[in-house]
Image (cartoon, rainbow, N blue to C red):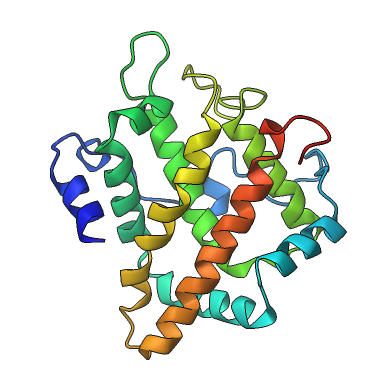
Amino acid sequence: MSVLKAGIAATAITLNAIALPASAGAEEAPGYRYASTDLPRSPVTLSDLDLLKKTLLFTEDDVTHLRLAGEVLSDQIEAVLDVWYGFVGANPHLIYYFTNKADGSPNTEYLARVRQRFALWIRDITAANYDQVWLDYQHEIGRRHHRIGKNEVDAAPSVDHIHFRYLVAFIYPISATVKPFLANKGHAPETVEKMYAAWTKAVILQTILWSHPYIREGDF
């Protein structure tokens, strides 16, 4: 964690230096379409999802601790997003995916919209009920990372594809940076560890689902 924090603090090029609005609720987050009836159905079945959860050792105890994590994080979401956006902003190879394709400058409107949806994602990951509606939205999120859907919902003139390797690589920072926030409400260390493990499993599960558009047909 100290290395990650040092890397964020070591550069003056952070997204926190860009004037971005605080995250909004669902009704104010452009492009947030969870539970929209016109989303494409996920090609991953609920049976496939159950087997993935089983392989990840994801249990009802994890669901319980995710719910608790949601309570713990509810008033810390902006602080979590500051860390994540600081990390992205500290790394030109990551901020690249939020730049204007024409001149390589950061697209602040696009960044702001993604931040608002990211705040809702923190809520959604801790409250997920793993039904068809949830599964369909994971597929939609995957599409929005891939060239088949990136920029579509925001009409953003940004680069048209996020490379698959960074979906996988991002699992660690999105998990490790949350752990200190989970410890901020005085829970016992073993409870914090259980929340952290549940969060990490949930991030891995969603990343697997988001990868579907990247995988050759028949290989997922």
